[in-house]
Image (tube, rainbow, N blue to C red; front, side, top):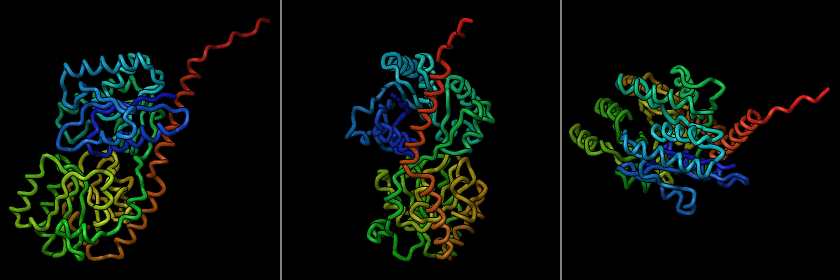
Length: 398
């Protein structure tokens, strides 16, 4: 079996980590050949192309597969992918992310690839964008959906949103959680030296946020509640793990509020080091308005840290209200403030929620389970395809 994956770019992000783990894991299974085609990974978000340093033959960069809409590049990327698929003819083409998902599936369909799979890591359309963009992207997804044999979703919420938009049938969807290496998070210590290097004291109540410093991630919500909340919780500090185009604005905002010493910025952190920063948190907040199933929440839960999340997309499937954390209506700033205060004042509550979170993540989020589920799905899809194309036997003559 040969499977070729396609993604728009390999920046530091959950969808990219998922794809890399899938390709590398599948490539280790006997009888499976797997590789990845990606566009260039430019920008302040960092690159994960180094993940293939020991397996360089598994990664190819397609220079025309760029993230912005660029008609000339888009046509050239489509033609290049179609030529690769026609020449190499993999059994399965598996696409990821918006641009690669659309161009890659159309190219695979036109190259007559037997099985075309697309993973929905997060919504490409919805209320987070304007009416025109929402119309264009939903139409594009419906068009590409007609060239798709099966959809993998990281959260049931993605399946429900796409079905509601008229994309695919229920039997074309399979939920496979975005697995990761659990061991570093399960044993992540509260490293006091790392705390001190970030200006955090052993007695501080550290609220972490793991996200690009970008639009729709909810950082502004924390700045909105910080002045009042810190008067009630003097030991409260925020830890922003990640980098992005809004970093300078957030640092200036913290200074303008007179709270610069209450916000720690790590900058870009390699995925292999994220567990160290989760280990020094007391709780995690996830306030994104757009994300399939936020990887940061199960990572925090794996380390025994309770989570507070806005009820967007798949967050409710891991941030179980009152069980592994607190789930709030999007934009509920009083609820956010109150939930943080409850956690700050009750180590016992943090411990109870953290233990429940660890149990959930152990069961659902191992990278081994993700890879095994993908392999099993591939085998089923190929068997179904072979059954459909098997010639009918002639009835015996009487």
